[in-house]
Length: 78
Length: 464
Image (cartoon, rainbow over all chains, first blue to last red; front, side):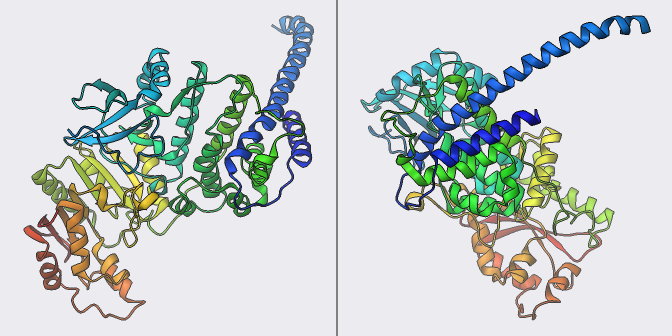
């Protein structure tokens, strides 16, 4: 989970430093910025979700292997 | 009714879809022909039934009103709420509950191919102990690929003030009184500590979002000339992230000036306290109000005497810590008739928004059947230098009946106030009190409270 968070944060930081450079204009409609902004974070959150699923699969794969290895020893203990 | 009903001052922002009006003392919502597709989708998709069954959306019935305008597709009669309250009157957990309810509604709407076009905290109101969405016309059929139109509003109305209250100070909910469309995100960014950035949802939806807003429409990703498009899964991802952001915010309850008032109360013996409760109860029984406002309610000990009888009771209190504590206790108790709200009576909620009429002031939401002001008069008269005649005049406009406690000058609580100020309160006496209040009220009863020199009055307003 921690790794996911770090990865997501890194993606965010890169995305905002390259796409979103601040410049203050008092009369800009903040709504239009928000609208576009969603498209940007949607991509990043999408990657986050994909990463989550990916790690979940890897974890499931290894836990599958370990549980297979562990199961005989568990049964002998019983 | 008149052929073209007039929209209430709070109901002009979405005039194309419809508006709310009053006729014959009842509240109605007109659905315009223009809103027909979205309204039919809400009713036909099963979303309306689902949300109403879950207590997330206000229930309505479709009615026939003679003389409706040709624009009208349907006239709805929503169930009426005893009081409209505003986010600057809510404590932290109330705003948080309203935020989480909004997210829950939007998630359920997405699942049925619809979406909220507003995420205004003013659309969330307290009904039977929980928050419900009151704007039935907030739903639209979701257009494929379209971002959430209410995203900015959600961040400004909910996430930013909650973060400020959590990281800085509970009193920052008062920013919502100044900024009717929620706390501007650049302002929230500059007020929040940098450690707030370590939480991804806050970094994203407040700090980075604020930066994106400053770029305005020029903030579109390079090379794209068309509108942005995002998938439903990405929308759900954004909602989940917003929910995590909201759920991760909390406040601890410190020992504020008022929240230990009853525990530390040295001005009452337990017998006096019970006696006072019984006396208050008998006065409430005598009035038998439908709605009661308890002014200076602290954590709502006496408010519960009323709410326990099924009377809708608002526990107005200056200290947001007390209101927070009261709300948490009320939730645990499963109270459906008790609403704790923040109010500084020396500077009550004003009319705000367009023409100062969009959100009502305190008096505009009254008069109610009964007002209770226990152990309050000395704070207004001595603590805040408000002359007794002015207090009487104002209270007479808030409610038809008044239960009020007079705390005499030699009471330890008044002596405490006088210890740090010059005693310029010559009229602050039983005679001065009765003469000032007699101008605006008929005094029905005066009871002495055993074990103290305090007096409890029941009065009827001459003006409300």
